[in-house]
Every structure is written in C-alpha cells, then in structure tokens.
Image 1 (cartoon, rainbow, N blue to C red):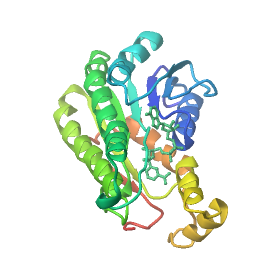
Image 2 (image 1 turned 90 degrees about the vertical axis):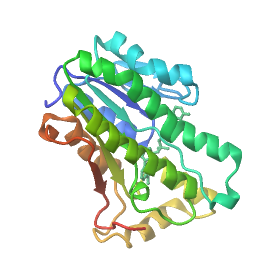
Image 3 (image 1 turned 45 degrees about the horizontal axis):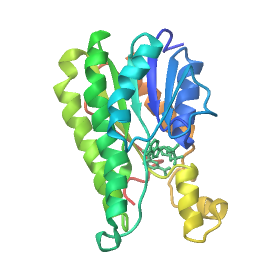
Length: 243
Ligand code: NAD
C-alpha cells in the first residue's frame, strides 16, 4: 500500500496505459481522479470528463481534482495522440492536435498543479513521453517533436521545482500493446495481432510491452522510492533503445 492516503490525477485514464496506471494506484491505496474525453466506464473515485484541447478544462483539472479529493499529491500526464508522416504530409489539424494534447495540456496541468502539490508539502508528477522523444523514429516527425518537447519540459521542471519537494520525471516507453498501437496498424491495413507479434520479435526481450510494464515504472516514479529523482527520463524499452 505504497500510496495509502495519496490523491492522484491521471489523464488519459480511459486509455490503454492510463487505465492500468489508475487501477494499480488504487490497488495500492491511492484515491484517483480520472480525466479523459469520456470517463464513464473508468473505475475511479472522481471522473472529470472533458477535452484536453480546451484550455479552460486543462487549466482547471488539477484544482477540480484537488477539490474533489481534498488535495493533490500525484499528477500523471499520460493522455496522448499520435499523428503519422513526415512534415510534408502533416496537416494544420495534425499539428494543432499533437501540440495541444501532447505538449500544451501537460504544460497547463503542470502550471496549475505544481502550486497545489507544493501546498501539500511536495509530490510527484510523472509525464508519459516516448522513446521517440529521445531517439526520433521515422515517419512521425511531429509526434516525435512533441514527445521531445515534453521530455525537455520534464527535465526543466524537475530541476526548477525540486526545491519544493516536487519530483517531476518522465517515462519513455517504446511500443506498448494499447488501442493507440492497434488502431495505428488497423489504419494501415494490418491485422493488429499479427503486426504486434511480428514487432515483438524485433524487441530483445521478445515481446512488445504490456501497459502494466509501463505502469509499474510510473508507480515507482510516483512513489517515495524515487525520492532522489528529479527531471529524469526513464526509457522502458525491452532492450530496444532506438527505433
Ligand atoms: P491510448 O490511445 O490507449 O490512450 C490515450 C488516452 O488519451 C485515450 O483514452 C484518449 O481518449 C486520451 N486523450 C487523447 N486525446 C485527448 C483529449 N483531447 N482530451 C482528453 N483525453 C484525450 O494510448 P496509450 O498507448 O495508452 O498512450 C498513453 C501515453 O503513452 C500517450 O502519451 C502515448 O503517446 C504514450 N506512448 C504510447 C506508446 C504505445 O506504443 N502505445 C509508446 C510510447 C508512448
């Protein structure tokens, strides 16, 4: 029960990784405010449905969660979107969506949330970046750029807010078996199960990550066990560092 008495906000809580993060935090004693476009089916103490592209929703999320939970100790910025293609095939809509969800929303949530964590005497923020934010992969220029941006913001915030007892770190996963990965294969006309099995053979550990492989590291960074970590980017890649 590492998180007994802790209050956590998790974005993207209806998605593949976010759902498991929320379940695992609650299983270890935390009370969770879940945020996603539609949280109706998410198990959590508080559900705050809305669109992270709406600045007013993103700005208000930490305070809304803190009001409902009686304070806030942990923020997990997990929601994300992926757009494909080189810059020459990137539309204005792809650009606005990727920057809005992957960079601007976590920026707004951190800006509003850090003072609340400070009020609680400290806390933890874990951002979900990507291996592609550290080692850019092919054909996803804007996605990689947004993940590099949130990785850099994590390093900056980790340093700037350490003195307040706030531990801000990021997890950088390689491919994870979630709706994000599966729908990407479907859109390109591949059978997701076959494609994921094939992709698994390119990973030294022999399989694509499951959401709990990532959530375990997120929980570690949100816990007291990571008390000396600030601004770290933790790659979770099954031994496959560069795509
Ligand atoms: P997912 O698509 O299963 O879940 C993402 C969640 O974010 C969804 O529930 C979605 O509704 C929510 N979301 C997206 N746009 C939103 C918006 N405008 N407002 C509110 N909520 C919104 O994806 P996932 O694989 O669980 O991804 C979680 C995080 O992990 C993302 O940041 C993603 O970039 C990152 N990541 C995933 C992989 C992978 O292979 N799956 C690899 C590296 C990093």
